[in-house]
Length: 108
Length: 118
Image (spheres, rainbow over the protein chains, first blue to last red):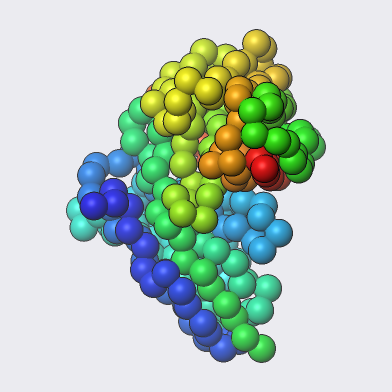
């Protein structure tokens, strides 16, 4: 069983839709990261959070430590949001374990 | 800051050859990570360093892989001899840690090196 599970694996949305990507993990962690990987391959860190909620522009990340669950929300989605979104959990050792990613396609 | 710098960006080599990938972390960052990304296995941690010292190399696939960090501004990942199954994108990332707790802040990724072993 993977320690980090993401859903859905693939997601197609129409421009303007509200999008939610989920991440569940099985063990205690010190922090959770959301990463974005564009078709060109570069990886960008979107959020690092250990509790509550963070917002940056149209992106919102939440985490529920008790339920071992995090969500990434995109409001007013745009074709330029099309990318792979990767959840990663960090243990106290500072080691990162990655989810398999969610491939998002936003159609105009 | 130029961000994390990796070289080369692309490498094509023949099976059995030695491959060396290079990484320059962001100045002042005390953690450096090497990751490998394949279609089959996604992103995997290979090894990471803290203050130039290897902390966890449990992700290094086998003895053919080795990594060094001779100083705070340079690290190498070497594969000798290379095999076709080593074909992947190799990412280097760096981060800063809290002086008080030792826990990291967010990681910054380099552009990656796409390795093809024929």
